[in-house]
Length: 305
Ligand code: ATP
Ligand code: RIB
Image 1 (cartoon, rainbow, N blue to C red):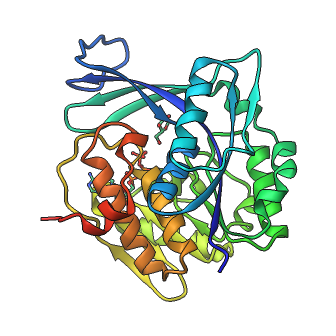
Image 2: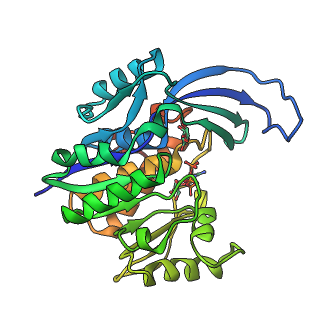
């Protein structure tokens, strides 16, 4: 069984301030705690897949600064294969400034720094990592030409590719056609399709439009409501798990990492989605991005009331 997982993507350090509410433009809000937390969509997904039980290689780029060094150390502690990571000079490692409000919602500004130096040639140079892998996972917090290179290599190696199209961006049909599984949230799905309004009528239509491009599995994540799944076996809502939200940062990342793990174990899509929703709901009950990613034991044993 080919169950190695390749994650290509960003690595950030999150600077988090807890605030009573998200500041409006021009507003200063007095916060409480300040935390420095490992983050970045790519890293969050790689760590989530590894904690869920996966054998994960992470392709990413950090700077030769204290944040970059600490990130690599953390990834190694989580068991990631970091041998395909690149370290660059003359730029800072990726940084995200995050406000987390009392209701668990957040706002995020990212300075990509070294993430912008993860280039197509780095993907071609990592071809060895792809050989024998069972699934590839990528997001959009790295240059889009690099995402194209990931799709190209995954296609040539015949490995299913999951694209989590976050942060939201328009993408070419040429790229979308190379994706096996896509996991937008509702805003990202609207941007990728011809729909402006987001409601219970348009979400199935957005999923159908993506499916008709040739994407075999479309999973639109809908926050606490769960997901809308469309594949050859099923179309419809799959409700999520009810939890008290502490911090929703990286819920989507934990969902994608756990999904990749479950699919690498050849679970059915329905079962993989259920596993991923359990993992994501648990992550929402904890503060921070990577610290909130649960282990296999937590995901299997969590008692949702
Ligand atoms: P983020 O940008 O916050 O990482 P996202 O917008 O990419 O997330 P969401 O649709 O918000 O993705 O969440 C992904 C999945 O996480 C959902 O489909 C659901 O399973 C789970 N989830 C998110 N928020 C909650 C919540 N408040 N309670 C329970 N589960 C949640
Ligand atoms: O998806 C959450 C992540 O987005 C954070 O960890 C932050 O680094 C930004 O990249």
